[in-house]
Every structure is written in structure tokens, then in C-alpha cells.
Image 1 (cartoon, chains in turn red, purple):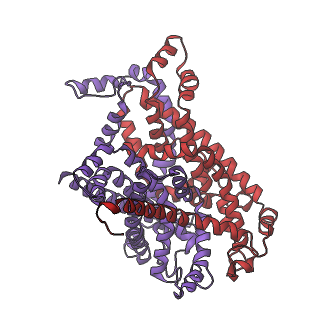
Image 2: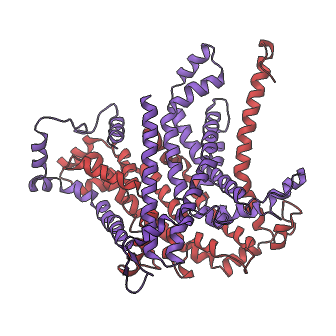
Length: 284
Length: 329
């Protein structure tokens, strides 16, 4: 299909489109295949996963799921994850909106400096504070094996405040001033006017936080010690079979289970998530 | 930092310019004004915004600044996490500079970065351009499918990749066997393990980067490319000489995130390879974690965190230098 004079132009165009479709569909297939394999394997008995005789399960079974929920107490772990992710998300979104609102809509002494200071704090990788933070959590706060280390330290974070500030610029000043003239308190204005008008931003940030919390592994594995307090990723990682044998059967069932809540969130709120992720990139 | 901040706020002023006093200009007498701004009465007038931003500063002081300072103190001691701390001065740092395992993990991060980031960035640009091409139907569906890995738990996908890449009975080697290619030691050879980890990273992050690039492409006016096409430029020329240069800020953003992400990698290698074989895929964060929680050498881990941070700061500064020099040239 070399480039050729005009009579073949249409064929060229069609071939090119075909190639582009092929590339895009091929990439999507590459992306989807591990999910497919995860799902198919979760329905196979352990021996069949490695037998490699057929792609689809020959003896489809829900045994892996049963043992995940019966022995692994998956429901308890899902509850832990949901609880931590929900509380952390609601608290963080609220505090970040509050901070973003102040930085966007008020003039106050030191605003530029404080904002720059806050942005600079983004450059600190979590691993740098992990060791001393762990010692603090254990010796000072006695928060080991509680949800608090996963909720409180990141509750008002620089990324979220920066993110919400962008959305806060769109709140109309006339509306705020009118409410002030009517004698509304500043906090009341934030609750009754600012929050309702920035819901898309709150939702976008909420999904990003929820996703981060649900899939977080490093810090939870440091502070959650006893098995009954594990979150879903910790449960997956602990699903090792006997020595030298990874319990891939139950593990794949657990992976599917861990994916379902995020998938539902993604399907319902995809537009907001994409908007949130691209919000920071194009402006910077 | 300063220029970046200004650019962001200028951008957001919008056509209405709705934020009063956002453009702060330098005037004569600004210093006197600054002094009067810190007057108690001025602070009292600003009590609401100060109160609204206080959660961040309180939490950052307690869970950010204090741990960093405490870490410095810790790094000068030998401590097993309980019991008395023993002062060792700079001993931890001296030992660290000769610690081949730690520097090896730094080297691994760098190698990994070189293995997957160029490929992934290029793929993301190409894929975003393809998705951006007007005639492609179901754009939303393709975008969603490509993005899906990003929302998945890394523990789940890490194990799935491990299952797929098992040397003796994994699906990938079986499929390769059908085509007549012998077994590849995906996870059992130093370089193949790094490549496998790179594959996992590309799989997990390609969609995210594509979405960012796509958003960047959507801000580029189509007239420029059309004009070039009318002037006889080929599509490849348009891509190389118009699209990529205009997309440059977004590309820099994406590569910056990738650098930071690569040096903070933990879960991916832990699950996929356990850091092996022979530490070929071990990362600095894995080192810090193990030194703390497995070896109980809290002081040494604190020193490690400090040096790790210094290296990241240097890399970031080098990268900004590199980028701004290109801008000047």
C-alpha cells in the first residue's frame, strides 16, 4: 500500500484508517487481556490454571470465590477498605475545598508565600517521611492497627487544595458579596453557596482520593498489623498458599473482587475522573 | 516555582477577570505595606481565610515537618525501634555511601526509567493522536478501555502479570511456544525481569498518560495543522514538526510525573518479582521499607530516606535545568 497517484487515493485513505483502527483495537486488546485472564483464571481450579489446555475454564467453579469469602473473610476486608476510603475521601475533599476556596477568593497577608510553600511540599516523596511517621504513629499517637494513620495525615493535602483552587475561581464574586450583605457568616457561605456550586470539582477530586485510598498498599502495610484490620490490597498480598506455591486461584478471585467497586465508580463517574486527571496537566 | 505559579494564576483569571486583586504588582513602598499587613488587626481581618487554610498547615507541621526533623535526629543514631537510641554521629551516612545494595537500587530505578518511560511516552503521544483523529468512532470506549488499568489495584495486576509471565507454565510462554519461540525467563533473568516490570508499568500507566496527552491535543487549534497540510506537509511532518512541539508542555508534565513515579516505585516490583532476581528490580523505597520493618535499623533507614530525598531533588533540579535550557535555545 505505497503512496500512489490520485486514482488510488481512496484506497490509501481506507487502508490508513484500517491500520489506525488496528493499532487502537490492538492496544485495547493488550490492555484488556490481563483482566480477561484474571477473570477466567478465577473460575478455574488451581491445577487447571497451570495446565494450559484451554483458555476458557473446562470445569468452571465458584470454589475460589467461596473460599475467598469463607476463609479469607473478604467481606470484612472490603468493609475496612470502604470505611477507610469513604471517611478519608469525605474529610479530605471538605478540607481541600475549604483551603482552595480561601486561596482563590480571599486576599490575606502572606497568601502568595503560603501558597508557594504549600506547593513546594508536594516535592517530598512519601517514603522520606515514612520511617519517622511510623515511629510517631506507634509511640506518640498509638494509632498502629487503627484506620487513623490512613485518614488524618493526608486529610488536607497540597494537591487537593491546588486542585480545588482551580474550580473555586469559577464561583461568582457577586453571589458571595450578596450573601455577605445579607449577613451570612463566612463559613455559612462556604457551606451553602461555595460547596453546591463546585460539585463537579468535588466529585472529580473525590474519585481521585477514593481510588488512591482503595488501592493504597505501602503505608497500610506499614501501619495495619493484625489480619482482621487488613484492607483489600493487604488481603490479596497475604493470600499466599503453602511455601513455594502462590495461591493464584483464590488470588485471581480476590483480584476480581477488588476491581468491582472501582469499576462501578469508574463506569458511573468516568467523565468526572477524566476531567479531574486532565485538570492539572493542561494548565501547568 | 515563581514563574509556574504566575502562569497558573494568569491562566485562571479568565475573560471576566473575576478575582479582585489577584495580580499583585510590585509598587514602591511595598515593604511598608507588607509590614502593615502583618499587623494584628490585619491578621484579625483575615481570620476566615487563615482559618480555612489552617488544616493543611497544622497537619503538615505535625505529619510533615516534624517527622522530617525527627528523621534527621534519628539518622544520627542506631535504634532498633524500641529501647534506647545510641548516638553514632555520621556513621550511618558513612556506611550508606559505601552501601552497594542501596546504590544498586538507585541504579535499578534509573535503568527502569530508561527502559519504559521513552517507549511509554512515545506510545501515549501516538495513541492520543490516533484517538484525536476525527474519524475514529467510539472514541469514548477506546479511551475508557485504555484507561481501565489505572483504576486497578497494583497488587491485583501485579499478581496477574506474574501468573501470565511464569517461565514454565505461564500463558505468555505457552503462547510463544505455539509460535515456535522457546521459553523466555520473564521473571528469572535480571534483564528480562526489568523488561517485564517495564511492561507492567507501561500497561498500568499508558492510559493515564494518553488521557493527559489527549487533553493537551484538544487544546491545540486544528487550523495550524490544516494550514500546514494545505502547504503540502505530509502527516508525519505535521506530527513531528507541529503536533509534538505544541504538545511539549504536556509532554514535560507527563515525563516529570514518570520520573517521580519511577523513583517512588514499591508495590509493582514487590509483587511482580519481589525485587529479584539477585536484587535486579529492587527499588530505593523497598530498601527503606525492609531496612525499617524487616531489619529494624530505624536510624539507618532514616539516613537512607535523607539521601534518597537528596538524589530526587538533584534529579528534579537537573531536569528543570535541562528543560529551561532547551526553552532558551
